[in-house]
Length: 553
Image (cartoon, rainbow, N blue to C red):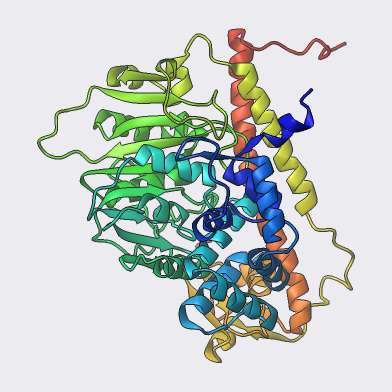
């Protein structure tokens, strides 16, 4: 047992100081820059300094940081109250206020806090602090809305140094986390696209507020409406969205981007991979985050084989479990290179397995975590690109991986149980079949606009989630189905019940929850397929056996 003196001499990281003070790591970094009396490092390294816990507590007490709620915390709480689940919209409104001085979208309380914060700290610190808090919130809730800090750290590490003047591109950049982290070097040209207009707006404003005047972010669906058709970047980074099976295959069946093969409906990640590769310049690289299942699924075998055969795939990295925000299952980094005409043909793919490391552990592999696999060995019937299967083929830990999958499935099941809304009996099946308004009429009077993400409200009197929820009703589905069976939203036919906006929001909140429920069901199905395949493989090769209590009488 340590005595009090020993406890007082404990060393803490910047992240631990942030937790003690109830702020983000960005706020702690800001304190170190602004306050000359902030404790000096007592150990660690320049990249990860350690501080004396007793010195930190004394400093916090003197500065009253441990007792006063910071502007950043108060602003986050105000945004939560105003924007609820639409926190990206809140972040965009704050960034817009800091950039233009126009508080549009913010209530008086939030606007006052932003004004106070801007007077005490640079705008860049404010937006970076909000990004970090949003990442932490997403991690704790299991959301995939933003790249986690751990995924970002891994992509930056394996992307390596970006040369001055290079172009960095992210076709699904969200709020710009990966893009800004990788393209942080001097003179880097940044380009991005994001389907969510609020996220795209925030990413652009954040770049401007942090001095990245060479950054341009476009809003729109990258696969269906590429905003950068002629762009060829030196480095492409991407964490593809988990958008389910409808990535646009039927519309894009003959698209020239599928030079390695047309992905199936279930292989949206391979569509994103080829989209990234199409935007990669000669000699340039792509670093893309991929689910572990894309390395072995039967439906993607042909495309994986082409990647290997043409020497495009140069490295696959299995990251530790817990790196991704939403689950403990390991994710992969696939690193591609577009060859130059005079490049020698590659002979191998480098496989790195970091799944045994801690999520915040080292990213540089040890000698027993890396192997160069000859192309001929990969070009078999399965074209399995799972690093662990090549590095530890005889000692693959089926039990640990199966247990990890079970835990991930249990997490998803727990979240599903909480998400499915409790609904009560209504007045009858035809009770809402009364006064309605057509989508065409709403568009004509300017209450809605339609973009790549679908129709959305432009008026405080119409809730977007309510609108989109009723567009998926059975009656509108019938109206929107042609005689050939093709489904499309028909602006001339779809109709929406007329309700007070307070009622609309009640319905909208439930529709939004149902959407998240469906997305998690899709993710659960993928985890279930992998768990079943792993269990079957382990049972048939002897690596797993039935539990002693699982007997059949």
